[in-house]
Length: 511
Figure 1 (tube, helix red, strand yellow):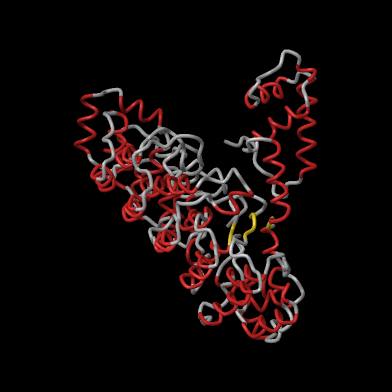
Figure 2: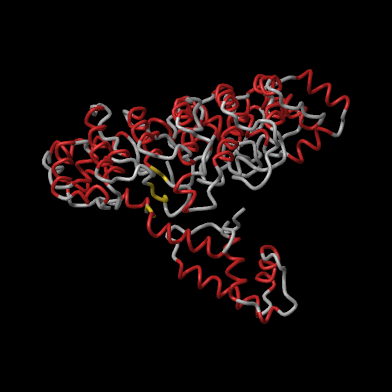
């Protein structure tokens, strides 16, 4: 697992300097540098640190950034230099109407995305209807097959030239364009066929701020992401366009698509990708470029974990029906919301109080988990099963204390799931209603409080109950430094805001 974060614009020279600095520090006997060497170098700390070779320091640095070796890191940096995408460009207006249209028309996977931006693109095209005639990137973004065909006839190389405000190739502008939800399918598909026929790559992709995994053409087709369907919707003709790209050789094992679409229960993207081999093969050209990307089978195991923990029973069934391993424990490093903690899918389902998914997995042949009083107590609380809680407490008096010790932020997870009764039960058990935790995944990380999630979801009943239990409306979350009231306002939850406003102390200097 990486211990250092990749910078926004990584450059090999910077990493070379870091490696030399580490080498010098180790040779000087710096305790922190020696400890880094001990953690990551297979040979440990040599008897004579004064003779440490640069290659050893390079290896340690590569491991700290999550790469198996220095050559793997340097290869990744070369890939990032060629395929990098600076997301900040989406917020920078340009004077040329054709380029500004491209900038406004396309998804950028930044806070800039949304219908208001695309309306500005439509207005710009109305004012400058000829902006697509001499600019193939704008012609692609506007889905103008006649302009694209003429420009390709003049210079076929244009199909693979990078340009426009983001330095993308034309097909990418077509696929990421959202300016017109009513754009005719025949225009979109005609442009895609012309570009593919002229040499465009169906596996085209870019590294968002130089970070893996790549945002591919398929990523743009399927849309969605952390800002939701409204601000990052799928392409209006995602099914037909997705099939066209997959028929042209796009690899269905698209990690960013799987991530962007996992937040909502709709499985239509998975059904299409499974039809083209999702979960099989070697991971395609991007896996060959970046060896640290997950194998296809592991990608789907991560999807299974998310579906189990977020009560997506239809997705669990779909994944199991397509051969995803549902029996083995999750092991090895993983993202914070999919840790390799040694639990099986059925154990996770039971731990989250999800009897439906647990029952399905058991019926499919999963091994029933052994007894665990702490897990049984947590599961009982999350499903608001007081009788189960009373039984566990009677049989295992220490289970409550151990549950509070191991899951101090559990009440945040319960609140995010909309569990008003579960929150009340956890408070009875001594869980702190003002504890910090994560609501997007059942892992311990001090992000926000339960009251923040009541505000975000507009759950007036939960907010009232939390306030009655002693929740502090003045606490700020640890990522955005905002109060629950500010969350409610930002997420357009007027009823929640009206309830929180009278009990939230005004910010100094703000009326």
